Length: 295
Image: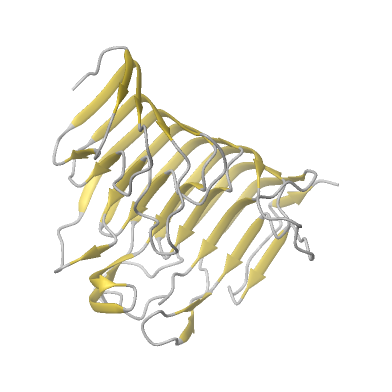
């Protein structure tokens, strides 16, 4: 479906299932009021979303609402039973604008999703510009009844972010490439995390373990936060039983990553003490030779 040029209000959101193509030509889709449902939800394979501008108001989601209140969500957080994986999804030449910095994610890739390309994405405002996050069979973060589901085999190629809380976050994923990222005035550049439960509920038949094969190349971070620009953490605390587990990063490739400290500008006041450009916690052997911190 090719949408004509113009500006169109969207309520309740658009749901794209197998083999849908949604593209624009000077087209803006906008949401008049904040809603929990994604503006665009991708729930099928072979889906393409291209050449659109998406405009959303600020939103204040809860701590486990990262798949909601978004511009685009690909996949689901929780499933009633073991799902079929969705795959071969392309999001290209999409601009997302929010009124200001807020807690809501802009693009969320979550759960049983693989073989995805995000290319030439521009984000203004909001929370995390792009997050990839585990999902699971169960009713919620404290009620997991089956395997956890970890996005993999995906690529982000060309991400421009300004005035958002964070450029990107990879949580409990594997076999991922992120390259050509430029961000300005972000409180956090990126986080690499193992998820609440690390691999406790992972299907033992999966081809790779989480935190394996992550590659980040060509990332320039204009950092205005008060904590850290990059965090690599290998530990997670389960919402099921409070257990803390760890999972080291294997073959983590950080190359041509630059942190440019800017004057601190944060949503909360006053700024917190202890500003550090890089934090590494229980992550195994992490080679930071490819990361440069400017004065």
